[in-house]
Structures are given as C-alpha cells and as structure tokens.
Image 1 (cartoon, rainbow, N blue to C red):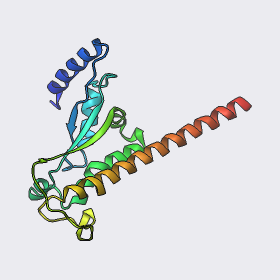
Image 2: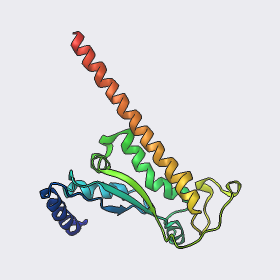
Image 3: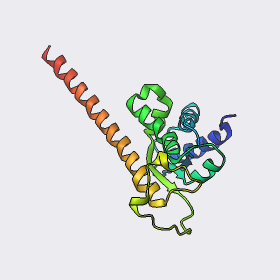
Length: 184
C-alpha cells in the first residue's frame, strides 16, 4: 500500500489547514539510518501522494537507535548509519534531478531533530577517547554529544553550505545569462 492510507489522512489534515487562513503544521517524520533508501521512499511517499502544502513544513527526526541496528546486523558501524542518513541528501543536493521527488520534499524540510530518552544519564566522554564514525563499531550508542555535534551538526552544516553554494552558482549563471541576453 506504500503508506496510502496515512497519506490520505495526512492530506485531509493539510486540506483543513489550507482552508483556515492562519493555520500551520510542522509534522515530524523519522529517518532511522538502517538503510540508504529511507529518504528515497519518503520522497516518493510525499510526492506520489501530493503532500506539498504552503501551510506545512516538515521536521526530520533521527532516533538514536544505532545500538538496535547494530544488534540486528543492519549496520556494521556508526559511520554506515550516518552515511545511510546523509548520503542521499548530499546526492540530491548535488543533482536535484537525480531524485526530483526527494528534492521536492527537502524544499519543505525546516529542521532535523535527534530524539532519545533524555532522562537517561550518559557518562561524559573525553574527546581523546572518541574515534571516527567508521571505527565506532561496538554494540553501544555513541555518546549524545558525539552524536549531535560532531556528526549530525557537522554533516547538516556541510549539506546546507553546499546547497547555498549551489544556489549562488545557479544565481550567478542566471545573472550571466541575463547580462549576455541584454547585451545582444
């Protein structure tokens, strides 16, 4: 069914929002990092079920489930999980036509959020004891600070900087085209 019923209910809610002049929504949807195809499926669901709305902006939740996927042999290391989450974003940022459905969805995304049980205390890890994501292949989650800042924050900044740079290059190309047409 590929999420048809959820999409129908979601579209009904969005239609109600659109009839009310000042009603907006920010639904959250999870990307788990267990497969590199999650964002592609999400983009298809969003696009194929016409879930675009001027009254809605999406928020991506990333649950801290590395230890679950590692135990189930769905990922080899933390680096693979990070790649599963962010590689599709880099690819569609470089070439939006490579997955126009995901590109359309990402135009509506306003934030990423890491979700976990905040009531659990974690030991403080000293930076000298931390390793690169590909070397984090044990059964436990990386510390929250490592998870959030070093990788999610840094990777999100890289994607955003890359997207802004791409936008400005496109803008410069359009300006050059306009200037050359006006000179001719």
